[in-house]
Amino acid sequence: MNIAENYIGATTPSSPKTAYMLRLADNALILGQRLSEMCGHAPEMELDLALTNISLDLIGQAKLLFEHILTLEDLAPNADVLALTRPQDQYTNLLLVAQPNVDFAHIVLRQYLFSTMQKIQYEALLGSSDKTLAAIAEKSLKEIAYHIRFAKSWVLRLGDGTPESSERMADALDCLWRFTGEMFERDNIIEQAEVSGLSTDFTSSYEDWQMEVKDGLAEAGGLVAPEVGQMIMGGHKGQHDEHLGHILSDMQFMQLRHPGLQW
Image (cartoon, rainbow, N blue to C red; front, side, top):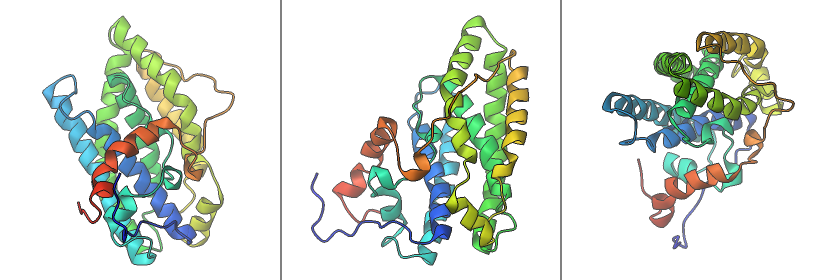
């Protein structure tokens, strides 16, 4: 791939504050990109529009976060470079959001699991010492409320539907549940975000989140989350698998081929 000789790529954050915001931005960007793959491929037109709108919401959230990060730390010439040019191991998104669109059951369950966590995570930002971040969170929460309603309604419909739809939802749950522990993993970046007043501790809500989601699954035809000996983690440390690599090969192509493109 031909990249201009004078091209300046993104650098990694040195501040725990911007590192935490980058996680939020990467989560929204990667899930938004994954959902964009469904444009024109959803089971029916109404669902096609819904998934596309959720994708746009998430990418819009990511854009606001990337732009704000650059006002705090000089990591890239612009938000496009920061979002679209880093090597795979510099993306700090959750592993869950990069999981493939196996079928519609996987798509709506992944959204339900993520959005219910994202709601808690963004509520913890409403009192942030960073007023711009708090405003981004407040705006995003209105969108997240719709994401949860949409995803949960389909989890319930498929889980309590036909034998085939119920089986597909059970398969999706067996596949995706093992990635959920990472959403509430507490590490130094999160601790520093709390110390600085950037966020309150949302990870302490893990058991409440599990209870809420498991109650929802029980309504969906009696779905039960599988027992998982050890959750799969590593996304926050840049330890990704081929699923993110496939996303990046599509998402980054134009920006790397033609440096300087803007959204």
